[in-house]
Image (cartoon, rainbow, N blue to C red):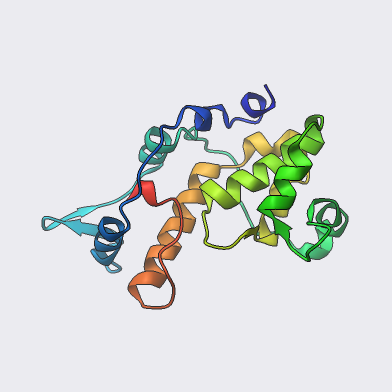
Length: 175
């Protein structure tokens, strides 16, 4: 019920997808920065928000774009969400916080877990602190454009990967 209320119900219908990393890396390597597109069979191809909605189940929301928040502004919330055995907001800690809790205490860890494991997927075992601002006010989570967030994160990762600066991360099924 809470998941539907915050606009993430479509994620529950996402089928299991096998990630073919070699194919994803080949597609990423076809990215042309001048055209801001992947060049497939000589044609520029771009991932749209509609593609994101169809593939991920995230609605094509035209809500507010996520702006990384200042940790100082969210220190109290960070203290509540961080793993008590760590200095980070770990996936293990978020899962523990979700069990048996009511609305804000379930929704915040759930959304951060979803961001770290699905929307802005990373190899790390924790969620970046810059996403805390999204869950500060449970009432406004639904207005966050998570489709744009996942697309921006993936494209930043592709650009870094093509430039040899990082491994390929993000919502790879979009590739």
